[in-house]
Image (cartoon, rainbow, N blue to C red; front, top):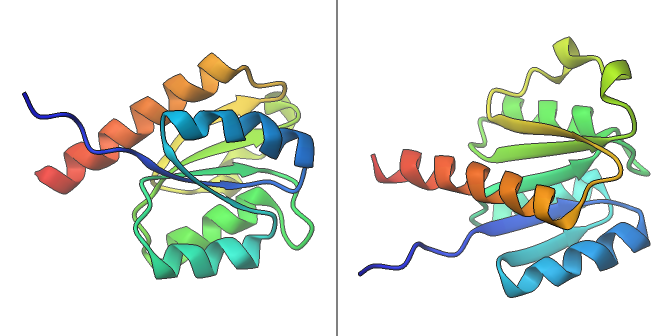
Length: 129
């Protein structure tokens, strides 16, 4: 039996409490953290990632702007955007073709794990086909 490849995840969030919460996911996934959108862009350029988790409010840009930059660069990464209120989110401006899921705060640990698993499986299936 072949075990699935571990999912490589980059979490882009400026909220230190949120980063501490997601650090617990490190037992299940390969986790990297970034506090700035510009730093996330350089990390994606420098390595393999399966899933990008972004909060919509970052110090240097919005999460939706970051996703748009990834789309423009041609990066193929499943993305999960976490924001305050889904009803107020301008979905037409997100436009990210690999966007796997929108999650509204607060996000539970099991909800986030399910979203990561689903997004990672889609990206790994795409890579193997």
